Amino acid sequence: MAGGREHGSSEERDAELRQVEALNRLAGPTADGTGRAPERGSRRGSDLLVAGHSLARSESLAEALALISQLSGPELPLRGQAVFRADRAFLHCVGSLGACDAEGEAFRLPLDVDHPATQVTRTGRPVLLASPQEYRDRFPSAWPLSDRAGSAAWAYLPLVTYGQLTGVWLAAFEAPVRMTDGLGTFLMTLARLLGQSIEQTYNGRADHALSQSLRSSMDRVGPGVAGLTVAARYVPTGGGLMIGGDWFDSIVLPGGRLGLVIGDVQGHDVQAAGLMSQLRTAIHAYAVEGHGPDAVLVRASHFLASLDEDRFATCIYLEADPATGVLRIARAGHPHPVLRLPDGTCLLKHVRGGLPLGLDLGEDDYPVSVVTLRENEILMLCTDGLIESGGHDMYSGWLRVRNALTPGAADDVDALADRLLNAVVAPHAAEPGARPTSFTEDDIALLLLRRDPADPAADHPGRRLRLTLEQDQAQGLADARIELQGLLHDWARPEHVDTVVLLASELLGNVLIHTECAAVLGAEISGVQGRRRLRVEVTDRSDEVPNRRAPGELSSSGRGLVLLDLLAHRWNIRPEPEGKTVWFELDEDGPEEP
Image 1 (cartoon, rainbow, N blue to C red):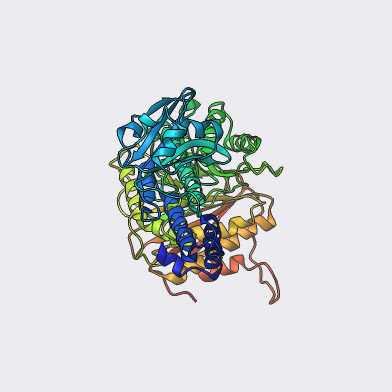
Image 2 (cartoon, rainbow, N blue to C red):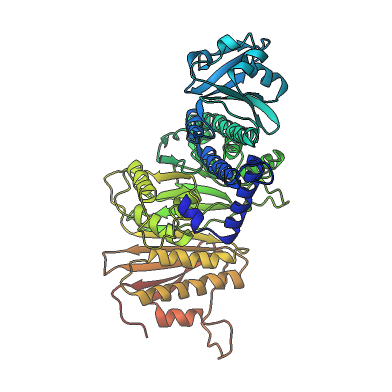
């Protein structure tokens, strides 16, 4: 930590100097007629600064008392310490260091007796006893209980946090001390630092217990339903809690369907964990009631906004039909899913989405996207911690996830989930593309959904892509290009990739511009590496058949069929019962492009 301060910004150094000066003033007056050297106040201020930094990081009362004992010296001859807390009737010693049994952890005293610690509890004022004689004179009934052997002075100081007295700190000294000359003020400041440290410790234990309870209530999701296998993982990497704002859930729905949800409440503290628990329960209830994915997210957004916690959440909720593999997905500001094809190819699956939950901006629009899982295909849902952990941005993090998700077979989903986490949670300081280590870790939640094959021994070769572009989905064209590029990531002829993107864009654009129908894009790769064939189809429900034209030099349209003639190895138009399909094919080992 010292090295970090040395190289910190000038603003940080100025703030620290101001803090030292303030603590010096608290430690006592300098040599302005008091006869005391100015170095004493400076040294006490520095001691308070170091102690404050250390106490703020202490994890237990015993550690805090041990840190204070390191300040012992000729001017502060600490012999022992004890901390007391009161219930309704008694004062208890909850921790001690170097105190004898009379005022050690076995100490238990009624609040109505005359004792320095009980007086501090009743009045909130410190009791400073500079000598054994003063102790005997002021508290004769308590004198037999005092730590007399080896102690020559005592200070009983209130522990105050946020204006409330929370306990009493006893500092016993092995030599007489003068509570003037700034020492009393020094001890009061030290007591305030100790009080804050103790409350942080108690709050931290309470937060840990709450998060552990929430973690056990979530645990792992069920195995799924017949025809669908689910694997889930959770890693609490933020804030030291057992759980934060990330969550997942699996919900068995009527008709044998399965509901899956994954989400992330803003923040990594225990408040985020509490909100997560409430939101998770609410979404589970809305889903069981039979609401569709869009209605579930609308109700969840209103619920979170009604809590008035000024926090939002991202979320994906989907319904899965095991008989058909159809997924109906609604997304609220959450990262897109990833589709893993049977041969290991991974595609960032773009689904339409709305605003994060809880923003309550009057826009309750969570469109439902339909994705069909083939047998042995896996859909991955995750929170952004899986992608961005380790200093990665969304792009380099996606590449890391893709590289971990691609290898191996799809038959062991749990092993796939473990491999993903190992790639992310394992040390990654030397990974290319990772930023320096000045980043904040986030929790990680992960869900994998696989459509099980009807015949486990059957082979499912090839790759397939299918997506639907509605008339109001201008962004869908860009998403389709990205998914086609992912489908062809290992195509032997890189120039073909640009050709496919161009031709598909032309066909999709024709449907969106010249009809009032949605465009359905399908793409399939078949064959062996190096001699594969790609077939792309674009289907719509319009009966209007495109005609080949000779566009002028400045024409903005009419080039689609001309480009198909020039660039595709084969193409045609196929009438459908409703509408038509325009298709083209390219061979991986085909002729050079003109």
